[in-house]
Image 1: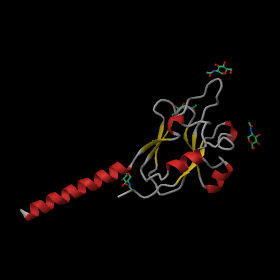
Image 2 (image 1 turned 180 degrees about the vertical axis):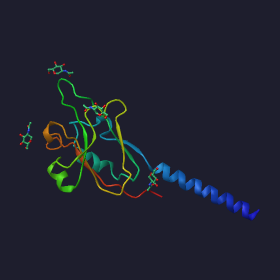
Image 3 (image 1 turned 30 degrees about the vertical axis):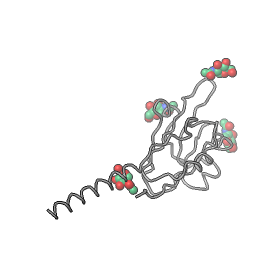
Image 4 (image 1 turned 120 degrees about the horizontal axis):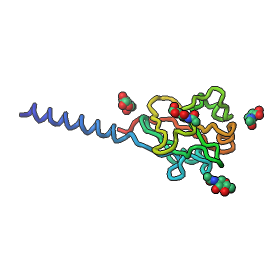
Length: 143
Ligand SMILES: *[C@@H]1O[C@H](CO)[C@@H](O)[C@H](O)[C@H]1NC(C)=O
Ligand SMILES: *[C@@H]1O[C@H](CO)[C@@H](O)[C@H](O)[C@H]1NC(C)=O
Ligand SMILES: *[C@@H]1O[C@H](CO)[C@@H](O)[C@H](O)[C@H]1NC(C)=O
Ligand SMILES: *[C@@H]1O[C@H](CO)[C@@H](O)[C@H](O)[C@H]1NC(C)=O
């Protein structure tokens, strides 16, 4: 009896713990209702929406290129220096100009590394002065 209760309690504890961990991972639309575009300063947005946790999903939503817009993209910049200078020479393209439409482009923060995001269209001017860049250092999961 005692053992069975203990086992049940342990199972419940495991279940609760796994629910907590699963519950900690969120899906966040970058820019909220403004999506990913030129109408927000994403450094400010990121500051207001921190902390981001490991395994959170960021969703970048943006319109494809049109007659009046070259469109947007999502790049990962390799370090703080390239991020500060909006230097895309060693940047990794995560999503091109058409991949942000519909449900958007989803990216999971699943590594313990600083993430430097920026839009790379218009020869870097969306990154600066357009302010389509932000820094997301994942925080440990909440327990
Ligand atoms: C993040 O998700 C992966 C894959 O689901 C999982 O293996 C890993 O344990 C998770 N990391 C944390 C810190 O929750
Ligand atoms: C593009 O700009 C022109 C001139 O401002 C405007 O007439 C047209 O409706 C715009 N097209 C789109 C798709 O927004
Ligand atoms: C963007 O990437 C998708 C998937 O790889 C591809 O089908 C599409 O042609 C690309 N679009 C542009 C504008 O490069
Ligand atoms: C892009 O920016 C670089 C560096 O500022 C400049 O040398 C180059 O002429 C620009 N290219 C275009 C197409 O504006």
